[in-house]
Length: 310
Image 1 (cartoon, rainbow, N blue to C red):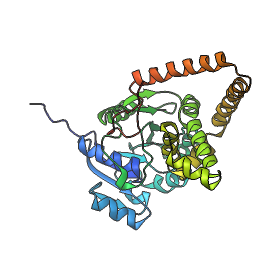
Image 2: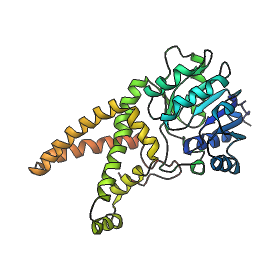
Image 3: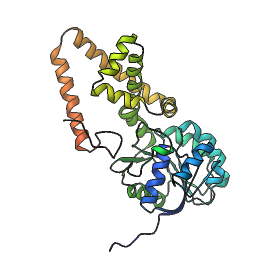
Image 4: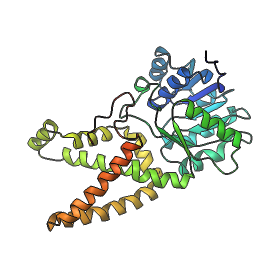
């Protein structure tokens, strides 16, 4: 019989209880990682929903109330809110508490959160690369992080025991953990996540600008590729607005590179340069196979099988 382990934390406070926050609550409880899970949300409706679903033991209106005596505080709101949230909760943080987050950009998070935290509070920015196009507390599920990467970007001087503890937490949720600098994270995610979302929003937006009869046929005859774009484009608009504004330099750099590559393909199509097109398509297919081999392909929902045929 396997011996039951003690929880990693006495109390975890989730600042925000949308898709990621609710999934963290469910996964934390499922894996017995905290004795108490609390959250905060501005909306009374959201607070009522979280309690009705049994996501947390208690939920508060303000972060200052929620983080009292918390061992681990996780920011789960759009990154544009972090500055104000960190300022509001800082006086209530206990010495030795760990603050982390789930934002898709990291340099701006360090800039906005770090200066507010009092001495004796540890800060380990993080980014679970997991999600769906759905949002809100009812969208969460405990398996969201299983088999997904979580990137940690510790600030200089981070205590090794603190980093080990946060690593253990994400690993216990089923994630594979990678540690890198915030600058490297933002560059990598600009091309693997942020630019694809920008392209998806653009393509779906272009489709909506077509004549009415063409729009109807686009919806009716949507093939797999366009369906994938619409799924990505259905993601939380506020979250992605903040991502692009807070990682603008890296996104603009990758967008320029993409524009140059697109010009090459545009020329190849115009002049019938089949060898150029085939060469590019073969190279990109190999990348897709590498992603499949790394078990990072398929839908964003870990509960759904990968239906892609390779």
